[in-house]
Amino acid sequence: MENFDAIIVGGSFAGLSVASRMRGNILLIDKKKIGTNQTSACCTILSVIKNLGCQDSILQELDTIILHTDWGDLTFKLPIPFCTFDYQKLSQGMAKKIDAKIIKAQVLGREGKRVITDKGKFQSECIVDASGWKAHLIKDRDKDFVKKKCLSFAIETTLDYKAENLHFWITPELVRKGVGWLFPCGESSRFGVGSYEGVTDLNKKLDLFLSKFELNIDSVHPVRSNPPPSGSDASSGKERRTGTSNGVHGGFFPHQLREPVIDGIFLVGDSAGQCMALSGEGIREAIHFGQVCGGLIHKVIERKLPLEQAQRMYRDHVLKYRKAFNIMLKFQSILINLPNFWLTQVLRLLSKDIIFRPVMLKYETIM
Ligand SMILES: Cc1cc2nc3c(=O)[nH]c(=O)nc-3n(C[C@H](O)[C@H](O)[C@H](O)COP(=O)(O)OP(=O)(O)OC[C@H]3O[C@@H](n4cnc5c(N)ncnc54)[C@H](O)[C@@H]3O)c2cc1C
Image (cartoon, rainbow, N blue to C red; front, side, top):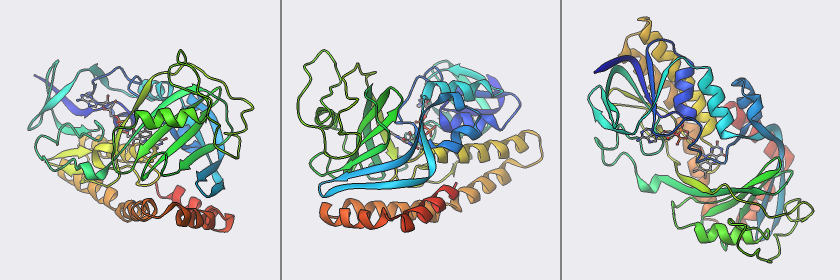
């Protein structure tokens, strides 16, 4: 059986970030070719992508969010620019910079310090689970680890549609306790619907959402003629046209922080619940905690730090952010339960520059 200095399961945001901070005999395992398993709408703070040196993956820079509710449209000016990016380009750009053996294999589970895959067993003292919300190396050991009530669910598709701003629709008619979104990506836009309750039956909701823009997933089908939602660039219809979808992707994402070290295994990204409630933002977190975890494992490989101490330090670092994760979860629980009218009033207040600007500047510094 092959032995490695470290084994990382999962080659997305978290796994690639862990690998980016280590050198040695490293194995990175993913069931798919790197960059081909996009689940995300891929929107994050612009500087995050720039800091990775992957500017060529940026699709569109964005400085305004428009929220649409049953009671009006609200504009939020972002004090820090966001961007949408190309998942494949970013992942492959990150993969080029790492020094690891990458194999395509399905991870089936774990026996102590051995990772079992459909391509054989691999062994290491340092094992990282960056396999996403299912936490493949832990879930079989602890049946309660992945709690359905702590998961949100969303799906999206990309269609030819130009827009200037990030848009969210918070209307119970679309998804109860959920949102619809439009994220512009240059010539196209990502359209998605998500449920904070983890409801998975969203295909019809996505259809309904697209019909508001006179779009549909399969361009062969007749285009519906419902009017688009009122206000803003998303409804001006100026640049609206139908296009061919790249299919529908998505899945679950956690909204509650989990234990970051279990049974001697490091957990990073969604596998450790490192995705913010309410905003559903998990990319920045996966990258941040991935880099910290990778840096500590590198010291273990170099024999500068005992493994147990690295695990304690990683756990302590993650738990420093527990308060921020809990605050976002509290906001999520309160806001999704407010009647749409009162939610609109709260959001109207929050959209004021004097409130939103400092909140966002603080939010940026969390990671
Ligand atoms: C529809 C949707 C939209 C989202 N939009 C945004 C957004 O705009 N901005 C944002 O910040 N966050 C967003 N999120 C959340 C974000 O996508 C996640 O938090 C982020 O992807 C977590 O990264 P990760 O590397 O931990 O896990 P993942 O990205 O889920 O990657 C897990 C990796 O593990 C691999 N893997 C899984 N199982 C196995 C196995 N058994 N064997 C081998 N390999 C395996 C997978 O192929 C994958 O490459 C969104 C989520 C969804 C579902």
